[in-house]
Length: 481
Image 1 (cartoon, rainbow, N blue to C red):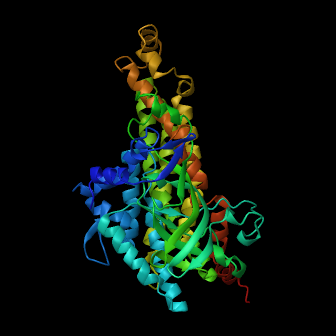
Image 2: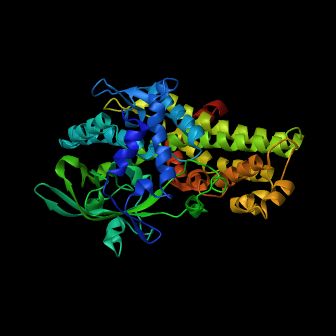
């Protein structure tokens, strides 16, 4: 397994074609807008070498029997599913942001079972191809970016009906040695920090959408791939050189628009090719795994936010106020409810035909639907308790300026004996998580990551088995039918 530093160096060696704020990025690993997100991914490597948490952060490969980073692991029982959620909470606590490897972990697990079932049905060889790719990922401890979300264009039309056919990623040419693809993937978490890009279709496909039913993996610096870094609230604070105004002094997240401009993919890296009837299965399984993930990662970041508010209550002299304590308890209650959902869908998981364990889809979607709501209330309560200074606070430069700093020290102090700077740092951390750069990984991603609320409701309605529930009620009411 790689060390954190070995991981950073491996990303620095990649020759990716990337842009940020209209300018070409020569070395993304050293760019101030990107380095905090790289640090967050590096924590997944650091904790894999920490004896205190290796029971969560590592696993044994079912392919080779070797010890591997859990982010490259295939779930083979319920304990794998549970430990995944516990690991994600731990990493959320350690970084206070998105640590970016979850999408790839969820993608490889969805691909493993789906390719097995395609082969069983169609007599193809996708599963063996995928196992070879998986061994490569595990043996080299690589970050795999799961790429699912297409631009979609006119949401009222299917992929093959779009005026511009490239608005869903598609196959544009079939060759003896592989395929050529064109299109884009949006909102790609950690794409510039990844070694491999694993592409999946974004929705269930019909026969007329066959060119869009494709899944494959390519190195992230493959010719024809272009990355455009997404903006985040207050992101240029990372370029100012200070530590207070960024809130989170070391870690951050990252998203990209990833363009595939006639990218060649060799056949050995193709795992789905026009088998439209399996696209929906792959999407549903990936979405289920990723909705489970939010019961861990968002809870860990929630722990940090709750801790920041508890500190501010101490700094501001309201830790004994009953109304403040009641709001803090409500934040804890909501956060632990999300964790309970993540654990529940894991313990109720069952084996698929390949032996890979799939979470309980109903409970995973319940988990994520709660995530679209609870973090917003947690953030609202945090902003309530933090107070208005969180959004009117002068800059770190003003604190360091001899002409203005003494006034800030004097008038922005809290409880006597608490350094003013401690209060200001904690306020900036709360701002970072609730409305700043980390809000992408906490609030907004809680709504749209792994699909918007309606996507969960569709699956919940399908998985709820209403006929069974109607039968229970009829039996107890004495109705024969």
